[in-house]
Length: 610
Image: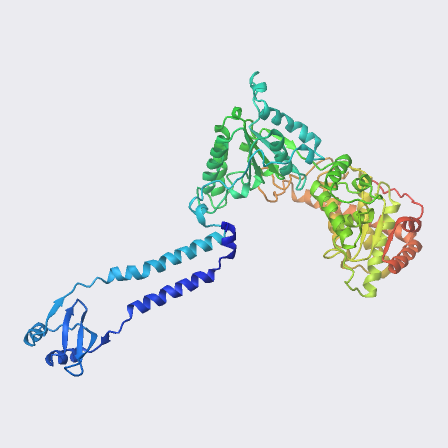
């Protein structure tokens, strides 16, 4: 039976049973047919000459007690407590009873009885440590690296399995060429970068890209997370770093990949407890190892992070992580390539247009697109379809964007009407403003945790810049739901909470970061989430209280202006507002041609400048 099967079938109750059996056996061994008598009974028996074979030890007197008929005497072993009796020897000699002394060694007996029990308890403790993941050989070698090692024939991923990051692949191609033929670079005195830092948002494929580099180069791949270095025991992290590089040197050429580098490489010197904590010692050891290894042997360190701004500057200097590769969110072509890879094993219906899906998902990363493909396949299978069609993909996108449908969540009719007017208010304002993304769907079917309805406005193209007019249009659109509630019901509700958060964030950025307020001017007051020192906290403001007051006033002015714009549009389109809300209450979902008909011809309304 393999070891893993033994561990899975072994139960801790077996250990408890063994301990009980050993304890019972020890108890039985210590027990015998020996009769305990008092010392006075013993003296009386000596006088009556009914004892023999006396053995005297430090603590007790043992022997044989004779009783019954003299022709057929009965002999019974006895024991009594030794008393400090100076006349005992004389008494035994007087009655001509033979006796002997004995040195009692109770320690050996206790060892023989209790050592097996301790051994069994040790096995039990060892088993529990193994089950908790901290026992076995690894417990005694806590300083060894926890990196997973993949040999060159185990890394099956190559650049064909990676899409949407063509620029990053092209930049990493140089690394592959060096690992395959280092003499080409060494002949001219060139040196490959020791460290390559992959920077990008979560889910963009940084880890996948690192494994693809190892697969393309055909070299061993060491993979470890930054958090696996740091432990509560001082010195363990540094020992693991040394062991990792020692193992890698023996297998060079190879690639060491450290995921989530920010868990290990945060800026030093900011420990609130003072002194050097374990993480700083681990980081120091990593810096030393990066200076010590020879890149000409083909040992390359690749790391990934989505927070490069908090990394220690010593990590980013030339000679360490001196090459930064951006793994950005894919564009439309990249999204199409990613969808093609994830859909190659999915049975697609003829109406599926992956290019259309790619166009509807700007801002989605590779992990999001993989999730869309898998969700669509699950939806089709749940409905008993023979292939995954376009409807399944559209619903998968909505599920990821807005959450799972909650058709069983019951709302009062008054709340349902309020949600309908709220969502229609968003849609009407969006259709009347310039630069707004077209409204594709309005729904009052609850989704996710708190969404009672939603208005779907997927971007039609990738955007990298936005104008003042477009941002003001977004502000007015977000406030359209609140304005519709006030117009129809004469008071607002808590339904606009999420809209207000998004709207306030946009307005604050317009004033503090983008310089879009004429009163504040072309000044930015945002130093980022980490400040100048790189610490992971909100930096204190570096402007006066008067300036802070002006910023707050400008943000409020922009919000009030956006609300007036939304209010003006909806009061002018009040008939359309009631008509669309009534229809939405009937069908719960408006989309397609009916939605376009109800929205009618778009009337562009320009907002006033800041």
